[in-house]
Length: 194
Image (cartoon, rainbow, N blue to C red; front, side, top):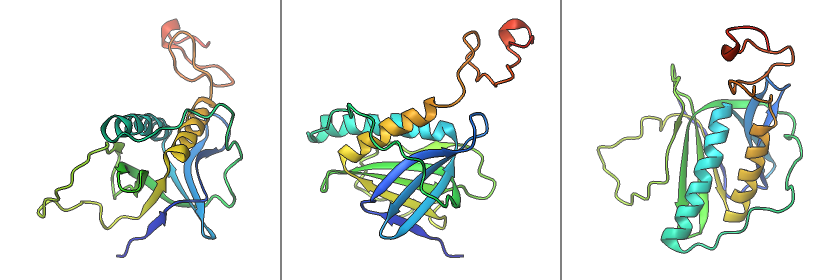
């Protein structure tokens, strides 16, 4: 079976967004460019981790390679909804990150979940120049979305991703679990509705 690599190097737009009401939202990464639109579904925790790890990657690139990093955007950048139609290409199982020193760009790769894959993975910023010929990628036959971003575009993506994650249901002040509009069974109140 053949796999597809949706490459945007660079995209016209790359954002994290949601479809649905808080508590029932589906999270997406969406890339647009060259007349193409690709949307891939993922979990809220993956979006949150992606933003966190991208921030760490930029800091490490600055420390190790002297890359000049832009300040976080002072104003709200891209706050538009996802482009339509939002057709899910695949569900993300693994996210990979890298920093390309030659072009001073961040590479984000979202790889489809394999059959029966249930765990959430996030590859870190390994700068490993030596390839082990016996080390085959287990998911080389899976669909993937590959995006190359400048540090400025990466900062804008991070800020939007954080806004999207924080725009959900507010947390319970006692237990931290999300509050539904009808309340929730708070473990700190021995199961009474809050």
